[in-house]
Image (cartoon, rainbow, N blue to C red; front, side, top):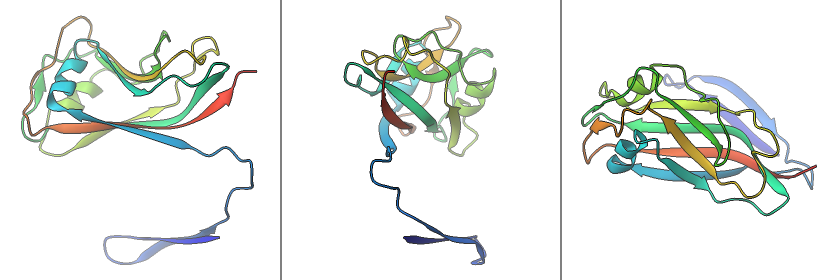
Amino acid sequence: MTTYAFIDESGETRLRGTIDPAPSGTPQFLTATVQLTNADIIALGTEASFEIVAAPAAGTFFNVVYGLLVVDASAAPYGNIDTGAGMAMQASGASSEFTTDPGIIAALLGGDGVPAWIHFPATPQTYGEAAGDQNLILATFNNGQGAFTGGDAANSGYVKAWYTVEDLP
């Protein structure tokens, strides 16, 4: 059993509890994190994709529970971002519904002096799209506008996925 507490900025305890360990055989969440450089972030606009996790074994698929993209563009903002640009965390062969709302990419990469992030809820995919020969990737759609521009070598970010690997039925 693990005890936890959440203490706010004033030092006041807001939440306290215990967590029992998962029963034996319970699937554990796996995580993968990929660091992004300024050059990586610029290349996202070319509709390039970045591998987060290599394909799982044959007969299995990724069950992505949650994804996160964090970008610190405080050194210099990015440009050439289409207002309809979108991003998704998906299997490499999937035809994705991009999970971001129009304009959110511009807000993320526009640089207002603070790091920003996008949450990726699980993207519905058929088993065929998520089969074991597919990598888990971060995909970008910039409506054919090409690479993002601007940025600075001091800008950086990362993409992180929480997932399980499941057997195909």
